[in-house]
Image 1 (cartoon, one colour):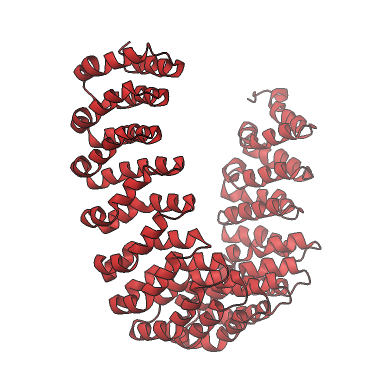
Image 2 (tube, rainbow, N blue to C red; image 1 turned 180 degrees about the vertical axis):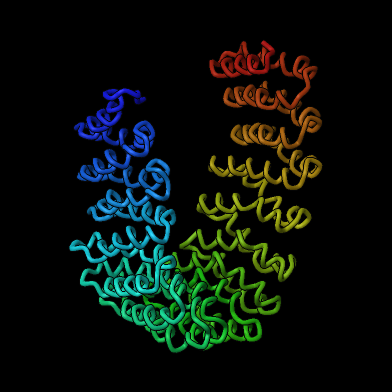
Length: 590
């Protein structure tokens, strides 16, 4: 792109300058995206002396242009001459880290974090740390929020005096007047704690954590809860009680539901971080409170964690804790007024059966599962229960399951609302896989056949797909003995819609059942239906022959299928003619 002689070598930068000053945003954006090409053409020296100063001076543009620039600069190290010159990238990124648009600032911080690793320790102290300090003491809150994300990347690689300064700056930002800055500091508190020496975690981070967790803004307090997980992991267990637990207890009873929600959302991580003793004494009562919180969002977040919380309880007293302290609250949630809470619980409650064992499941959990299966308001609750039946089946066995839950499933399968029926059909292959073939034939087969003649087309269509999935599960021989005879019997049904269902089933089953069953059992019935009184049935015969053609061998196609399609091609009905001719063409019989 650039020639060796004087004027030519100015060409790329001239074009870039023109494009960057162009009124069309798209052109400016394109030229920023081509920056690396231009830098290559200019060479490392001119990139440092001309391109970067130019970019630093032109930072007053549309946000998407600035975003692209912030991203590009993160991978510019080699283009400025490698790690020893990487500090040249700091001025434009520093400017980008102070703009008003959050997305641009975040991308600039991401690029700064990326290139911080390419600085030598000396350069880090000479160039990068001063930048962080300037941002941290900037007049605008934008620069101070950006600084929060940069402390942890430079702290491990600087001298102890500089470390002390960095800690001081971080402390200042944690008590900044602007909530946005305190929020940024709180969100980076855990990350910063991880790179600090243990004594400073105790002496510096804990007081900051305590203050942020009692900030007047709930958006700051809830971020402190997130940091709590990281901090608890860093401290030895004997310090947790004094240093972390008072603040955590306070958060579980915070007046803002958002903070309590965050506690519920992070509960399993907190539980692992604080260890078994504190869990037993402190977290169990806290969890009870979350499960009976006055806000539905908090109860739902807690309900999601029920199984995980119970799994992570210390093994020696687990069953007693669950039965006495957790299950009574879970029972309340089954009949909660809010459907999100019930749905969240239904997605995990089945997992309790493996923790509590057979007798407890039969006595205490089955009644809850039944209540959830019969939940009228919320189909999601029922589906969550059905889709997790396998883990209960493992614990209590198929007989027990069939006596208790199956009647409820059959009831749903015959529900007056077609969407409920549809949902059950979609779970049938899953159920069949969990319950096994004998049980399926005995209890559920007749249901699956009944759906084929449902008065709603969506149900008939889903029932057809369901048969195909069942045959994939149970095999062609099962299909030949159990399904195919019943499907083909419908070809003589007085209702033409049911006769058409036979054809749809043949389409779905031919490939799974294979050549023999299709040729011997299904094809004769389809050919016979070509003489049906109803045109809709006849053109569907043509479509079916086209669909099953690839499964049949060429002799059958020539001797049996071709004459029937040719006859349909002369039909008085336009559609029948059209589909018959299409089938002849596709099957190469024309």
